[in-house]
Amino acid sequence: MAESKTVHAESFFEAYMALKRELEKSATRFQRMTGISVDQFAILHQILEQPGKLTSATVADSRGISRTAVSRGISQLIRRGYVVQSYESTDRRVRPLSLTASGEQLEIDCYKVLQSATKLMSDVALNDSGSPLTMGQLTQMLAAVTARGAADAQQK
Image 1 (tube, rainbow, N blue to C red):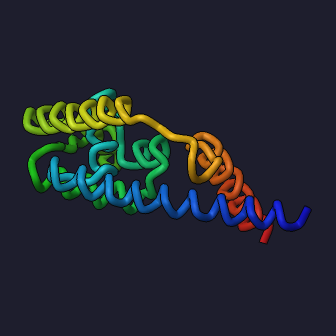
Image 2: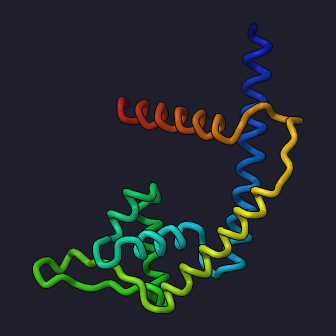
């Protein structure tokens, strides 16, 4: 019985590492093709969906990106002319975000890159050799580990 758990742990780790490598390569390709990171695209996409209603904190909380990364990403997007922040007259601390015309075009271009990648992935013939873990199973397992780690950290 212990052997099957060890094999399962090794299988999980191998699947995790393979997924991590592919995600990193995919993120690098995306950035080379579009000029922005995947996190920056997530920011652009959310601003497009809710223009003028979002702040950096709401983007961070809803996308699961750290507030530091969101602030840095927004600053870069503002400097590059893709995003603007406005100040509400009632509270200067609240700075809603909107896309510029070039930001909207960039979001459209990035979305096309994702659509192309999705089509390519749909055409891949999958085989059953290798790890028995599916992407969904691996994602669920990682989420459980992450949730447990967060709960353990809060208890300390």
